[in-house]
Image (cartoon, rainbow, N blue to C red; front, side, top):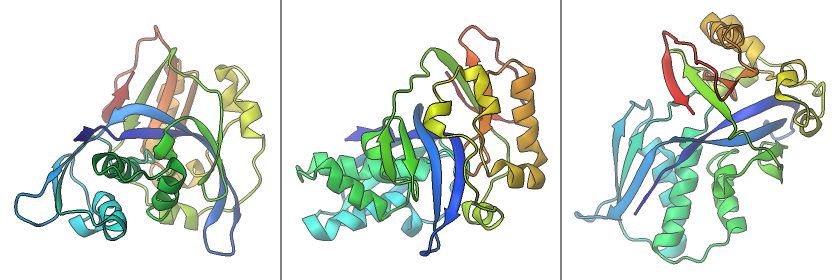
Length: 267
C-alpha cells in the first residue's frame, strides 16, 4: 500500500503564552499543500521491521524516525506483524512544513486501513498527538485554526486553489526548540480567523509569524527570500512555522521569480 504524505504551511503564527507543562499555547492556521513524500508499506520478507529511505537526506536515524515511532505506537495494541516501510522524502526537515508529522500521521492511517483496525479519526488523533503536536492535523488534513499546543482544531473555510503558491527553502535550518527559546510570548495583534476574511493583499498588515524576528536575525537569507517575494508581486509572503521555508502567494498568472535556493513547490 502506498500513500503520499503532504506538507502544510502556517498562515500566521502567534506564540500566545508559555504553559505550565513547558509547551506554548499558539494560534495559527494549518493549510495543507500538495508537496508530498511517498510512503509504501509492505509485509516483511525477513521477519524484521525496517525503514528504507530515499530522496533528500534526513538527519535522524531510523529509531528516531516518526514512521517507525508510529508503527511502534500501534503494534503492541493491535499485534501488528513485522513490516518494511519505504519512505521517499521530498519535504525537507526543519523547514516548518510538517513533513515528519505528516509521515507519522499517514503511517497511522495506512496501518488502520491495511489491517482493518477500525480506529476512529478521533482515536487516530489521540495516537497522533503522542508523536507530535501538529501530527493530529494530518489525520483529517483540512484547513484549520489551531490553538493551545497546536492540537486543538477549528475547521475554517479557506481555499487558495485559485492562487499560485511558491515555497523556497534556503540551505539553513531552524531548530524548533531554539526558536521557542528565543521568543517572548504575546497576544496576537488580530484575531486570525477574522483577519483571513480580508483580501489576501491585506494579510501582510494583519497576519504575522512571531518566529520571523529570531529567524531573520540568525539567517538573513530567510528574510531576503520574503523580501524578494514581495518585490516580485506576491500578495502575501511568510515563513512557515519556525522556518526555514518561506512561501509566497501570487495571482495565478504571475511570472514566478527565480531563486538561488531550492524551490520546493510551485503550484
